Length: 380
Ligand SMILES: Nc1ncnc2c1ncn2[C@@H]1O[C@H](COP(=O)(O)OP(=O)(O)OP(=O)(O)O)[C@@H](O)[C@H]1O
Ligand SMILES: [Mg+2]
Image (cartoon, rainbow, N blue to C red; front, side):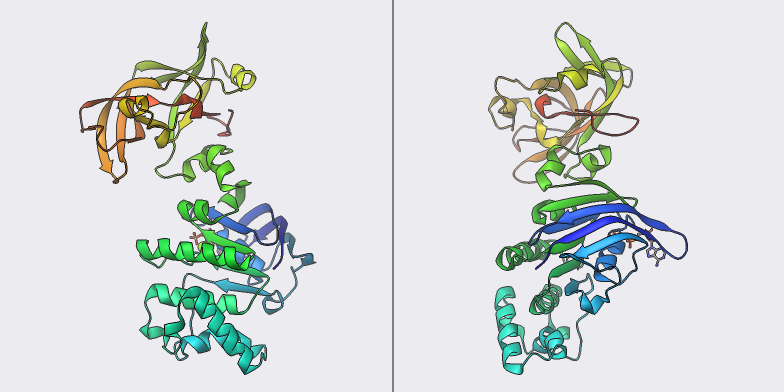
């Protein structure tokens, strides 16, 4: 296994298209790095550069302490798993898994041992003598992973490996990959556009947009302290609510003034130790961000169902109008109108949210974030 360093890496394709604009990422031996972002942001390009399938226009890529910019792919000691499984159709599962081992002239007896160990990890022992055509999508994906594991590389590279699978299988395989990582302690770079995969699998997440890393951190850091509006909106499902308004102040401290559709409402802001920063924004436009789980029905909040155990803070109750309800089972997502601005919240399934009816919502403003509407950076 090995560490990975990406230092000021740029990629300009021959047609002049600048796709990566100075990427800096560093992971330690055994860490699981996620590259996440929308379509076309440059995830696969970066992965292919680590693999050696694309040239590096500028900067350095190191696997362990070796600069690999000019090292051929097969000399990099990596294994790659793609969205399309790329299995050899005429070979059995056993032959597919041991293919790379044969090339490396590993003795037959040892190959057999490796295949059996890998098959055991992925629970595909009963499939070893089948051809890929007789396997389900999930089974093929396991074989493709088996082939990667059998090579025992310094670095695993995954490019959206689960995106061809149905929802249930995707969740199962996600757990399988996590188990594999825990068991083998492998260093992994994993590309996905699925923010749930990013949150659940990664030790470190790089959120990318337009060839730039917007934020690089642990899943919790990225979730709790997103550095800008893009990251805040991209990570988390349903997305964080954004309300546009002004920061004001009166004798009782700062408040967010929502000014929407000609109606004004004040949300008093607990300061969370941010008094000085917040002070600089008084009388200026801001965006207030609050996640759906920090707004619930007032009854649940009073009963302590809400995640609002913050000292003596009492959630702020607001009368809203329900627009849409989406029961998920454990809770019901509600889109409500607050001064006609849409807010998504998580309510108790028995809170009685009904379209076009009023509902009293409780906002836990200790969890609210403030953003600069111009630079889009987080203020507090
Ligand atoms: N060979 C190429 N020449 C020129 N531009 C390219 C080339 N390959 C990719 N691109 C462009 O580079 C950008 C990044 O592509 P890339 O495949 O890295 O995105 P991605 O983040 O993996 O997207 P997706 O989630 O859709 O797979 C895109 O705008 C794409 O059109
Ligand atoms: Mg891609």
